[in-house]
Each structure stands twice: as C-alpha cells, then as structure tokens.
Image (tube, rainbow, N blue to C red; front, side, top):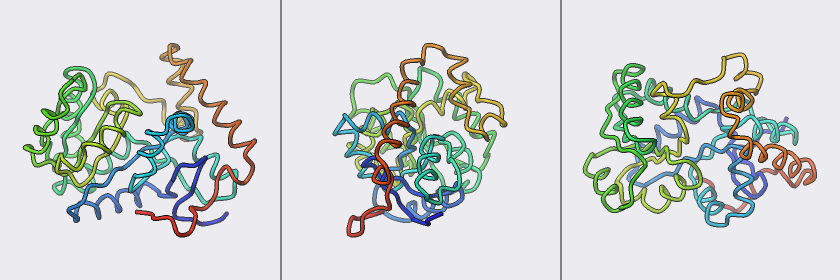
Length: 253
C-alpha cells in the first residue's frame, strides 16, 4: 500500500490518521493560539459535499479530517493507500478525554434539551480528569449569544453535535470567536454518550457493519442510507482519480 499523510477523496481532504495520531495532533493544536477545525468524515458527508459548495469549502478548510465511516476507509484501501483504521467520532471524544485529561476544557454544544448535559456527566465518569466547561442544546436561534457563552466558559475544545452540514459550517464561521483551539463536529455522539442511543456490538463495528445496525434500529434512516451506493458508484466509476494523494503545493494543516 502507498503511504500518504493526506488524501484527496472526491475533491475532499482525508487524513490517513489512526486514533493515536489524531489524538496527538489535536493535543498539539491545544498548544497554539489559533482555531483548528476537525471534521469526522463519513460517506454521507462526502456525497453531500459534491453538490453543496459551502459545505465542501468548510471541509477543505479543516486542519484535520479523520475517516469516520467504513466507506472512506474502504475507498482509500481500494485505491492502494495505507488507511489503517476507522476513527469513529464517538470513540475519538472518549479517547481524547482519557488521554489528554486535565488539558481539556470541553464545551458540549448540540442535541435535544438535556442530552448534552447527560453526555457531559457520563464523559466525566469515563475520564474523571477532564474539565467540562459548559454545555448547551442545539435548539438556539441567536448565534452571538452562544458564541459569548462558549467564550466566557474559557473552553479550549468545542464539541459540536449539530449534525452535518450545520456543525461544520457553524464551527468554520464561529469557532475562532469562541476562543477555542479545537472545534470538532461530532454528529450524534452526545446521544450515544448520554445512553439514548446504543452502538452496534463490537464485532459489527470491527467488520464495518455498524451502519446496518443503525438502520435496523432506525428504519426511518433509509433515505440517508441511499448515500452509500452513491458514494460507492462515484469511487468505482472515478478510477484512480477518485482517491489521490493530496496535490503537492496545496497547504495541509
């Protein structure tokens, strides 16, 4: 397999980063004064970006784009690149809290009322050393008020569970004003951490069938599942051009 630090997959950046490497890079971001967007990229997001220019540019602006989706791992491997593992967003949050501990001041933004608070409580049980700077549900209209609340909390990591593309667009626009070093779009992570949603059994996660488990629990997701064959078709019909090493001369973070 070909080793490459960053790929271009259907026009989007994707870093060949393991869980350990992702945590190390995020830890490095905490030592800088700048804002860093971290995108947890799944196949649905890749498909959406093909027709949504604003979302596509938000992903392209990210400092780190991790392979949260077995489809992205499959596509990279199919084209001969050394993509070692899937880095699920829900696991990334837990591992970050456990390994970086007291260095983290996290703010949880998103979910239904009460979900972020419950997720924060369970995160503290998983990683007692982490500091929860605050939380707020995703049902808000006034962006300025939310930005001020996060900035006042002195958080250095903002976990945004607003669903894509809203979370990535919101973080790209407001992340710097929030005063955080890192903003991560975490999708439905708060639902899992709060106990409202169960993850697939470990064996299904390992063989890449977590999507099937989620569909079995929530058949209403069938329209979202249509993104999977669309993604596969684009990869298969695009040939080697569908996944390439990141072009030389283009900035990487």
